Length: 183
Image 1 (cartoon, one colour):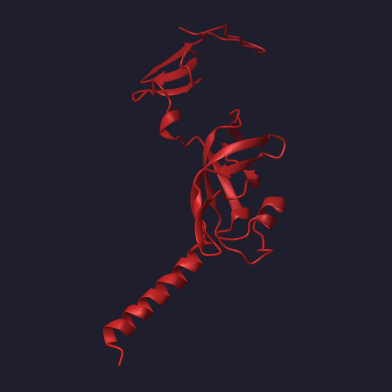
Image 2: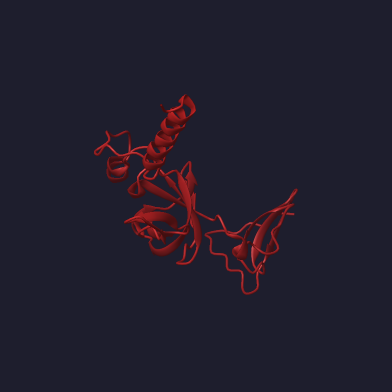
C-alpha cells in the first residue's frame, strides 16, 4: 500500500513539472545585447544575454536563445518632442515581452485586434536601451545634476539648480534665425 505522503508528494512533483513546462515558453523580460539597428524602421536585432538550460534527449545543456529580429526600440517621446540617441551594436538593453501579439498594433498603430493568439512570446519584445551590466556602467555619473552627455563626460549640457552649464571638448555650434542673449 502506498502511503498518503508518497501519493501527495508524487502529485506535487507532477504539478511542479507541469508548471515548469508551461513557464518554459512564458517570457517577461530579459537582458539583451543589440546586434544591429535599423533607424528607418526604429527596430533592432537583439541577442538575449542569458543562456537557458535545455533538455536535449535527456541531457541538460546551456543553449543560446535565437537572435530576436525586428524588435522595436524605445524612443523617449511625447507631446510632439522626442530624444534620439545613437543606438549601436554592443549596447546593452532590456527586452520586455508583450502580454499579447503586437503585430497589428505595430503595423497600424491605434487599438487593434490580436492577429495571433500568443502570449509573452519571443516575437513580441520591446528593447529598452540604456540598462547596463556592471562592466559597462557610466563613469562619473552625476548624482546631483541632470546631464545630457557623452560617455567620456567631456561634453555635456547640465542643469544644476537654477543654472545651465555647457561644456564641449570641441566646438559649440549654434544655428538660428535669431540668437538672443539676455543678462
